[in-house]
Image 1 (cartoon, rainbow, N blue to C red):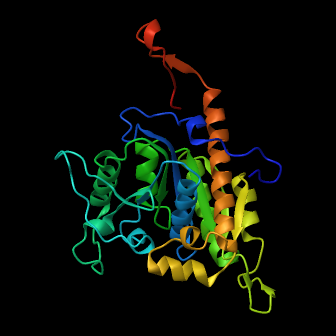
Image 2: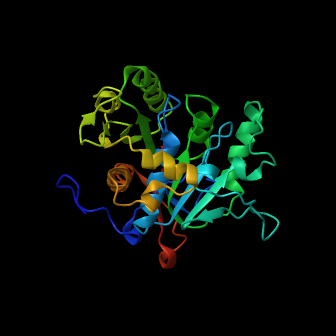
Image 3: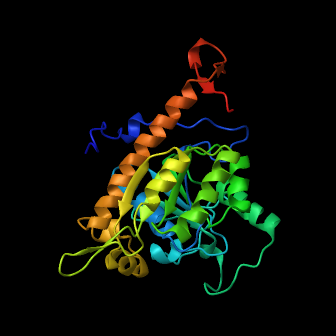
Length: 304
């Protein structure tokens, strides 16, 4: 369905692919979307999970990587407790739920309540394994749920892969946006394109139908203007998002007619369009002919 007069998102078969870095660990993934925020507690994992689910429901081959090593949430939000296995002794098969491929450090821990106490190099190694040694296969979108802040994870990813871009999550109040601005600044410094901003918990509607803006208003738009990227959507504060997330079924799957689910579906469509626009900018740059002859013509964008 078109949004705000924009064309409909392209079909999975028509999607363009990101440029690959040398030795890219995810050559079969067309789009890598980083979901991030400089602030904890803004519902970043809920946004990542439900946007990934909305993309899958729209027909796109989708994976979800829980890159929050210290606080993995994806196993709980998707109700997955299994342990990944290797079929060939070389690569790990991701788990799956509702058609979405999944990987999280939470799947590998004996005790889900135990703390991960690692220094930076160990975290770096785990992320590399989750990208290089997991058999993601061919995907249209790999959504990565990043930890809060501007630390090692985002820096590692900026060096290892060419992400299509980042979706920045905030809530409306200044105590959140003040930290989110720092996340936007980091993206600009390490050349991660910003696809757009999601404002979560934007308002609450009580049983009498009265709308309450519990955390103020305007924060998402302020972050969008600072980042020079669009406000992809505003997600209302609904108990169903928390309730279904705790039960292991994203609200987009459990209650697709809810207002929050509709917001996530619209955001997912806007993410697709933003990714396509980002690829258009990449294609404006030079290319290298690696055809090897007329029979197998292939032109690859030059990674900047």
